[in-house]
Amino acid sequence: MRRLLRHPVRLVPLVFLVAILLGTGLLMLRPMTIEYQHTSFLTALFTATSAISVTGLSVTDTPNYWSGLGLTLITVLTQVGGLGILTGAALVILTVSRRLGLHNRLLVQAETTEYGLGDVRRLLLHIAATVFACELVMTIIITGRLWLAYDHSFWEALWLAAFHSIQAFNNSGFSLYTEGLLAFSRDPWVSLPLALGAIIGGLGFPALFEAVREWRRSARWAVATKLTIWGSATLVGIGTVGFLATEWGNPWTVGQYDIPGKVLASFTQIALARTGGYEVVPTDALREESYPLLIGLMFIGGGSASTAGGIKVSTFFLLAFVIWAEVRGEPDVTVGRRRIATASQRQALTVALLSIAIVAVGTAALIAMTDRLPFYAALFEITSAFSTTGLSVGVVSSLSDGGQFLLIVLMYLGRVGPLTFGSAIALNTRHRLYRYPEEQPIVG
Image (cartoon, rainbow, N blue to C red; front, side):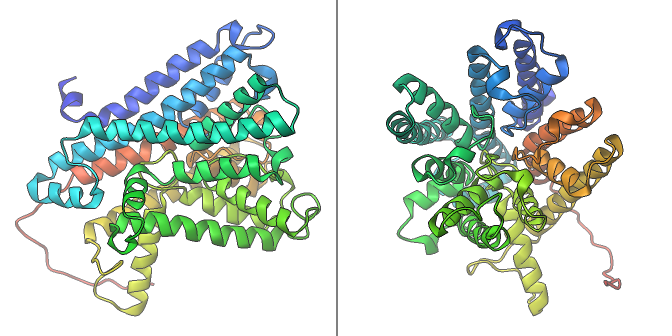
């Protein structure tokens, strides 16, 4: 216990595991289902893990299986998972800062810029206030739309709006509609607030707070903020154009809409596909060339210290700058007149390669466990679980018990792994008093 208290970062996986097991036990209670039926341990474990990890994958028909009490519990677990990872990330940053010495503590403070190292309470209050304020605005807009345009009662509209707003901002994909958000693909009053909420929730509090405070002077943003904000905008823009190009004539997705409808559906689907997990167009009806696009966006994910998963936008674009510097023969990797430390480059490369290895091994394992599962479907489901996105091609409920348990492990790793692994790297910096002779092996 003393070791854990000395290194609070190690508590994060344990706390999430305890929350998952507690949620599993509660979901197995008969009042949690509509017909008071027995819920198997695996089904409850899968649902609790999906909620706590803010993924949204489901092995049941969510609105027709879980009772109002069960859906409320899923909502609470999602909020705890999303808010918990934000506050956990904040504490990790502060913990890492204290371990790096005064010089590096000042560097971290310069990067976060908003808070001093001792302002833990103010930091956590700002995070909680941001989360609840965004969810409240989304709920108000969507409640009005569902109440006035979709013939729902006020209280029914409020419940639907609150549930989906919490899910979207926390980048989870549970829905009270069996077909997801397909009915709202051309309704900007419902789809846009959810898409924008998922984007904001996926930016991460360091980038979000600095961007809001310094919105008139973006040139003064820290490198991490620039990579996250501009990187996210680039991914959404390129993803929307790419999705339009591949699905333009597909009558089962956006091909049936007019041009504004195509653009709206494509934008919201890409915004939600990166981290949110909601379907605005049927995923199982996409053309094959659309799957690599969605898989790539899911794998990259959102910003650091956010509700999103993936290897993170800043990691991806940092590696892009490393490649660009190498192609140009530059001695240093620079972003916005700032030289990137070699340690950061190595950390980004390590996180990316380990994530690729996990997805590759997981895909091979899922194919081995499930007969006749196409490669693209296995890769899609594994990437969605590991990146805690929640999109599916519709095969999750038909997987074997082993396949579902594999997704459970990946959802857990995808939620707590990057945070704990990244902090472990930062805390494990070594300094040697000697260096070996240098040699340049042949590459390529």
